[in-house]
Structure formats: structure tokens, C-alpha cells
Length: 369
Image (cartoon, rainbow, N blue to C red):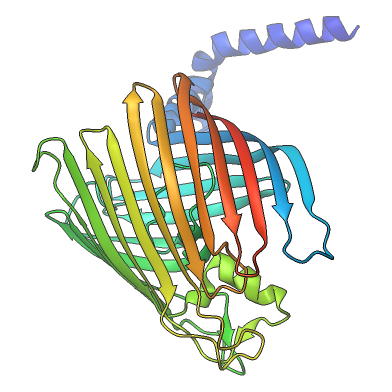
């Protein structure tokens, strides 16, 4: 019975699709009901300006933690996880206005709207290596403010990202010419001063220079500096401070970042970055004078053959109260097994300020589309 009903329904839809244009023309004349063909044409026109992209990352990991305190038992663990899933929608509203939405899932944390941005004037996001329709551009919405660089060839994020990455609802504007990109923005950060009003008072500024492509054959160069009025607004620091039992700081502490990125004949890449607070948190009892966080990252990557990249990392941090490793070093290798499909393995050794140590091995299978 169900089978007959389904067959009948399919035949009815087919008849309607065939007769739809004539029916719709008659109905449009009577009252403006659009036919199937008009609806499909309209949908096709809308979809012409919409692009989809995404990432799926599956990871297997093993960690061995050696605690310095002899009374604390060492830990060994392993796991498989869907580490990261991203789905992006980019809509060209006009040739000068674009919308961008990024849905993101990270291991067992649920799906969130990671980015929701309206871009003005930009072909892309209008960062170095992206062209603009004019010298100025602006972006408004939920976005990552232009503080830090965070380029990495590893599976695991660099320590500079863990300390400084800041996602806020913000307005950012800038100018872009001859390889120079200047940007500034304002937002109401997650971390407020104690007994202060909750208002828009945080700001960020950055200057980045990218050597125009082809200026020096086989050589790429990018460098920049950035400044933020309250480094505690970063995602990592906000979580760390909240874990101490407080959700405010007695005084804002600014932060700064400087980076250098070099590529040579598409075979060698060098990434250098330093990111830090300009002062300590002596005025905030839960943190104290010993908390003046800083992090740095050095990576060298080499492409010995098509589809294969190997890289080394040496990184560290200062005065982070064991939020981050004091020293980190490791190696990684990634191979493109198919188009837009890669398999990577990574080893990292972490040593913390309290002399705890950890060895971590991660294997990742990833696709991009």
C-alpha cells in the first residue's frame, strides 16, 4: 500500500513539473502565483552568488604526562575524535558587499556560529594577499580581531594563538595599498574591569606588510605588528581567568604581537612570532605580579617533494602560571594522499613552569572542500 502511494505521489509530481509552466502562466495572469520554472530560475540566480566550503578533521592521539610532584600519579591516555568540522557559506550580495557565515564543531563542544560577518568593499576578507575594490574596507559582525598572526604548519595550534586569539562582535576597518595593510577596530570584550560599566571600550590596531608577488623571484615576505587594549579578552585568557574564580580584572593590561613570515622558492617556510602582555596583573589578586603572559613560536617547514611537507617547531611561554608550556618542541609531517585530502603525524614535547612534562603524538586525517 505504501509502495503504491509513493509511486502515485511521484507520478503526480512529475505531471505537475511538466505542466507547471503552462499552469503558472495562467495563474500569474490571475493573481501572481509563480510557477515552478520561475521559482527554479530565481533560485538559480540566488545560488550564483553563494559559495560553500568546509573542513573535516579526524584525529587520534596519545599523551604521556609526567608530573614533577611524586605524590601525583603520572597519566597515559589515548583517544579518537572528530577534532574539527567547519562549514562556511559566502554570499556575494553585490560586487562590494559580501556576507560570510562559518559554522564550527570542535570535539564534543557542539555546533556554534564561529563567524558571522558583513564585509564591505572586499573581494575576500581583504587581508594581505587578498585584493580589494578600493583602498578602504570594513567588516562587522562576529569575527577574529586582527591581533596576532598564528600561521602554523603543525596540527596543534601555536602557543601564540592559545594566548592571543580573540573572537568578538566587532567593527574593523582599514586601508590596503602597495602591500601595506592598516586595520583598526572596536568591540566590547568579554573581560571587564572590576566595578566598571559594561560598554564598548576595547580596541585593536595592526600594521602588516606583504612583499608584492614577483618582486623578488621565488621569495615571499610578510611582517607585521599588532596591539590590543586588553589582552585578557583573548579566548584562552578569558577561560583561564574565569577558572581562577573571577570574571573581571582590576585593571586592563594591553598586549602586542610581532611576526615575520618568509617563503623561499615554495620549498622552505619560516614562521616567527612573539606575543605578550605589556605589564603584569599585580592589581588583580587572583592572578598577581607573577602573571605577565608572553608566548613565542618558531617554525621551519620544508617541502622535499610534491604533496609532502615536514616541519620543526620550537616554542615557549613566560609567566603564564602553567597555562601554557614554558618550553615546547616537536616535529610534524603531512602528506597529500588524494586531492584535498591529507594525512599528518605530529610529535610535541611540553615542559611546564612547575617542571611537569608531557609527550604527545597526534595523527590527523583531514579533507577540505
